[in-house]
Image 1: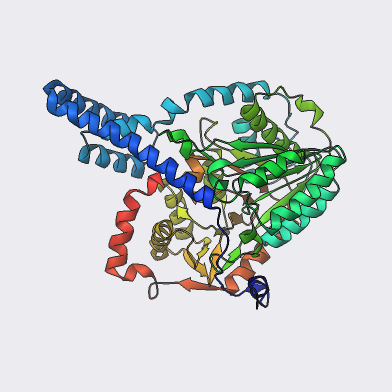
Image 2: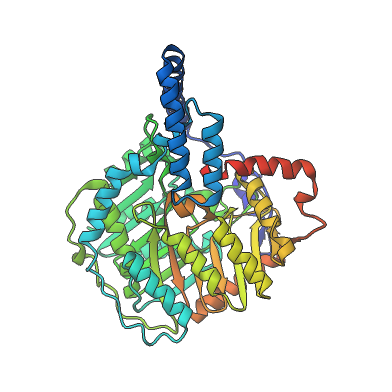
Length: 522
């Protein structure tokens, strides 16, 4: 029985947990080793040079102490959240002889300043292109407040649109592939991971034909996310067929905090009339064609109508940042027919190019606005104290708060911290579940009146270091479909309580505590 046949064995709608050895990109692995080695050597050189001069000259030691104190003061007065401040101060005090060097090189304001200035210029020139509609018809005050926030924070408009929710990566990509076939003007694709495999082949078969028909096809991929999965010969093939291909933040062997700022978005826009986002990347594991961590549970969402313009413009601004090409934005906007629905649908993006975390603030708003229920599905759970306290207060107020995490870890280190953080909340009345034999990669928050579906993890990386995409929706049919997905997922999940939680073991608590110290940098 071959691997692909094994991979299709199903138990009802739930796929059995299987782990199959898959092909790896040898050159990608080699590149990772070389880049990381060179970065480590650079950091080591800086540290050793500083230690050498400290021993040689007493004044260097005095300056080092002064710089360390200044760095600690700077950390404490910064806008870092409490845990990050504590971790940085501890690091600076323990490694005072060189810690301030790492801190300076890790400051986004130092090494991301040029990029931020460029982003600000692009955002300013596109600020008035999309106009907000009249929100007086929105009956729910909390929904209206979120719409106002999205417009004021990033000029994401609330306009006509209809959404469709997909409870699996397979359903999501089946729909995307059908929509790609209908493209007549342009196809915009943006993924954190683009990987060689069955799914990419399906995409390329359609895209090649579309290019021949004169369709403008563009793909943006994250260089770190894809460097081990997307082979050089595949990139050459994509370019040769006429697709415009751009890498985000190329992986280079130079120590720079900007390397940690990754494009985690998942966006597909077709002709400005249909757009998609969600948790799934363009890789076989997201459709369970490849088994890596048991059954891969993911979700996605489609938006149709003029609301698509939010994603279209966000994609074009990213394209201009990467290519410096002049773009006639109006040429790509206003393509969709007006579609009315019984709720609002607002596509939005977030990232370090903004002066604040739109993703984190929207999650906080959604949690704060819950009145009856609050359901969360996330692969990683490393929130800051603000969101943690909001969740505790909601549970103490009698609201039904439930969190679904994976049962199978993709990154054991991160999973240990996530599971430990979530288990701490059980005593406050929050109900915790793990989806058995599965890796939950879905990023969904649902309340009684609205939901957020997209690429945003419930962790500090998504909030502060990554470019993300999502859709805020209050459309009733979509909320109903999301609720059904939660209910179905719970049937395949085990509830974690005071008897079976891992925190019952002293060693686990100690290990999680150590890991949690560096979680702000994960």
